Image 1 (cartoon, one colour):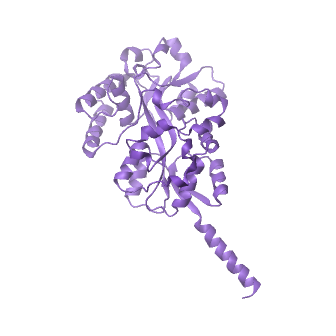
Image 2 (image 1 turned 90 degrees about the horizontal axis):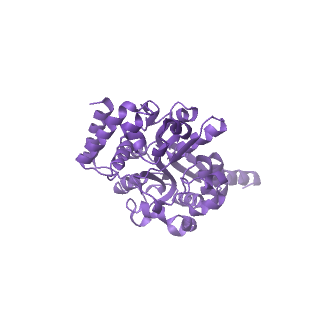
Image 3 (image 1 turned 30 degrees about the vertical axis):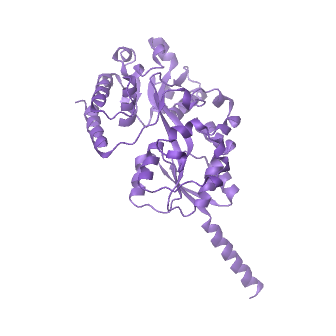
Length: 357
């Protein structure tokens, strides 16, 4: 074989090998920055290909429909349990994850009910569902002392002072959980009497709300159109930063509620039929490195389960009590998946609440 032919053959072989070194992940929108993805590609001499979803149900439905070719998905804790029941995940090989030691044990403990023994899931992004608010306007309205309580969005006596300036998430689980906690009940209760009581709380509060809003509450809060938003901590962080950047004449803030808050832990998991579990383990170990994990918090204001990330946080992140929360020191609860019967009943009740019956 001449040198030219040998060179061509070697190039073809190298190209085929390189083409095979691809990690396919199915991830949340905006969960991984382009810079982080590029650094991972450089670290493993491979290519990272991402598809995106905006809801656990969307991801679960796609996998249930037979989607193939993905190495990893990033389910919230309850969806980890769903995937385990469906036999879709493979256990993590901890010998390939030396950075596992960097994880905060508190988040591993919160994951235990969904992933016994922490065998299948590595926590990566954490958020709270809580209240964000215009501190300046609430002080003028005389309700600034209610910001640490769900009363701010459920008590008609409080709401009467801020009518039309409140939005809540268009999410039956999140809103019902908040109402249940306001009543001093378990956010995961499936007791029909508890659900009925929570639905009544929502019915009484609804006339004072401006909207059920998942899409634009960040902007509405940032420009001052609304004064209170029930939302996710990383979204409220963004609203706060946007208002500061725009030099708005008011202060935005957010904090947990004394009755309790839903805490969502998104996880890195490897699918049972993953084409490249070796690359998936490399990705997980990469994201458990303190510097790489810190980039998530620095960019989107998410609470971080990687204890080693704190050394690389920006000053504003270190000063944020929500981002720096300790999971064992608050009333935080992860939502559990519902069985088919309970899901059907909640859907029925939610429809009645939304249309006002």
